[in-house]
Image (tube, rainbow, N blue to C red; front, side):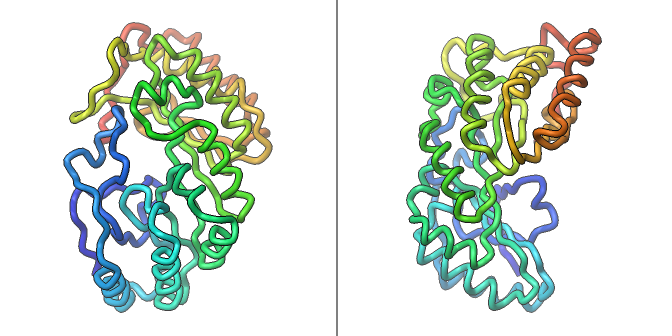
Length: 288
C-alpha cells in the first residue's frame, strides 16, 4: 500500500489515479505565489523503497490503469531512474494505460529526444507544466526560476516526441500593474507552444506566500477580463481548454479552435452583466 508524507498534491484530474510519492517536495520551491511545498525539504525516496511500494500496491490494486508519480517536478529525476520506475510499473500493473507527472521546462529539456520517446513507450503520458505567464517580467517578479522560451521549447519538444503537455496559466499573477502584459504575452507564448491541454486558474494568495512589492490583486471583474483577453489572442489548432477550477469566477470548458467564439460570447455576457465584483475578489474560493 502507498505510504504518503504530507503534504501531498496532485492535479484535479488525477483524483482516481493510484499515486506514488517517489520524491518529497519541490526541487525549485522559490515561487512567491506557490505555498504547496513551503516548509518541505526536497528529497528523493530511495529506489528500493519506491519499488517495494510498487510491488506491494500491485497486490492490492492489480487492475490499476492510471498512476500519478509525485511530488513536484518528477520529470527532473534522472532518466535511468524514471526508466526503472516505468519499467517496473508496466510489469506489475498489466492493465496500466498511462503514468503522469508534474514537470518543468528545464527538466523536460534535460532529456534527449530519444529519452523522451523511450519514456513515452513506457507509458509516460501527460506532463503537467505550470507555465503561469508568458511575461518574463512577471515570472521574474514572482521568482519562478524558468524562462518563457525554455518552457515553449520544452512543450514543443515533448509533444513532438509523443508526450502530451497539460499547461496551466494563472490569471491575475501580474496584479493590476501587469495584467495587460500578462494576458497579451501569455496568449502569444501559448500560440507558439500549441499545448494539447490548457487550463486557467485564478491566482489567490495563500498562507506562506509573499508577492512582490507593489503587487495589487486584480478584482473578480478584472480576472475575467484578463481571461477574455487571453482567449481572444489564442490561435490554437487542437487544444482542450478548461477554466473550471473553483478559483475561477466563471467555469468554462471547450476546444480550440471550435469553441473559441462561444467562450468569448459567454465571457462578454458576464462582463456586461454587472454581476462581477469590480472592487474586490468576489467570493473567496474554498479550495484549500
